[in-house]
Amino acid sequence: MAQIQVSDLTFCYEGSFDDVLRNVSFNIDTDWKLGLVGRNGKGKTTLLNLFMGRYEYKGSIVSNTRFDYFPYSVTDRDKEKTASELIEGWKPQIESWQVLIQMDQLGMDPECLYRPFKTLSFGERTRVMLAVLFAAENEFLLVDEPTNHLDGAARDIVKKYLASKKGFILVSHDRDLLDGVCDHMLVFNRETVEVQSGNFSSWWENKEKTDAFKKAENEKHLKEIGKLKTAADRAERWADKNERTKIGFDPIKDHDRSISTRSFIGAKTKKMQSRVKSLEMRIDREIEEKTGLLQDIERVRDLKIAPLKYHKEVLINAIDLSLRYSDAEECLFEGLRFQVKRGERVILAGENGCGKSSILRAVLEKNGFGEKTGSGEGQGSGSKLLVSGTFDVASGLVISYVSQDTSFLSGTLREFSEKRGIEESLFLTVLRQLDFGREQFVKDMKDFSEGQKKKVLIAASLITPAHLYIWDEPLNYIDVFSRMQIERLILKYAPTMLMVEHDIRFQEKVATQIIKVS
Figure (cartoon, rainbow, N blue to C red):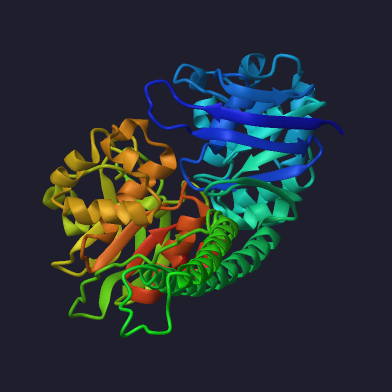
């Protein structure tokens, strides 16, 4: 066991006006299974890059351990090579047999190590990289969001594998993964950083209790401050009034007073002024004790959505549906049956590559979505999609679409809102509710984190009134707190939705129907 000590760590990207990390300090052990969570843009991936020595920073990181980082960088040229060939660049100190041992634990065919990397599925690529990552010993491993784009089966394999290991930081927004893997949590709160033993659920339970206590303490201090201010104001007014009676009295009306009375009045005034000062000091102490109580409270505001109500009950009807791309010999699937009715939230589930996103594309094409909006982003392969069987999509549907692809986002938020024809002020308000800082409003979207890019697409969808909301893996890279916001939104307003999403907790919360595609 060794320790990693981080002290007063501060970092800012070149050309940026705001620090990503500021005076961050914590200690962790290298044999922990550590989950790292926090809002998008709080610097989680940045911290991993600082551990890797990729940027200069202020403060100190003290450790005698060696770090390695997932995912490994893969260029277009690299994708032509096999994983066996890529190991030399990823982790040159290991040999293939060490990787094959880890691949066996991940339930992988050894043949995957010798196929061109481009032919591997997302799940296979992730598992090969994890096998390489864990093949060496005496390293502290930095695992950054390993389950993005993975189907449920692949997520279960990764969860079981990581649960059998130790000595790593896992950055993830998947609550099921964090609960199944981690024995400690490193949390980037709004203002502070904390380390706590346990998994995500135990940390969240403690946080809810702590937040409730802090809110109660805050209310208590506010009431006490109010009482003290009233008493201080009353005493100060009495002292001022009494002070004014020291001079200018009428000897006929105030026959019981004399010049010597002034000293008595002055003494009483001084005593009252002393009481005022004492009250003001107590007010300052109460304010000081109140300061910071709410600094880490997650002010998760409820979002709003304005779904349109379609006049028919059934919006999509599929009977014996089969899909095939024109340049492929085999169908993606055959004989699929499902319906999407008004008010339902249908989630498509299945292995990567089984055709879930293609179903979404088929709905969009039937509806003429790309033609109506001038937007074709994220709608899959350039080849033609061939549909067999009954596939009816209600006419005149207004669809709001969130693509899993964010690579097309560039320019400012203002330019994006103008292009989409959405109200800029409302759009920015929703982004603020999703914890966007105002400093992000003037940046080029190319410089946003992946989570922030996803929030742009979700915010645009939320403010678009629609009969049907089609979301393709909307939660990739989205932080835990925003996921909870979106869950509450969907449950409250019950929009009609057709989604692809692999987050188990999200499925359990919002789905009215899960369709298995195979």
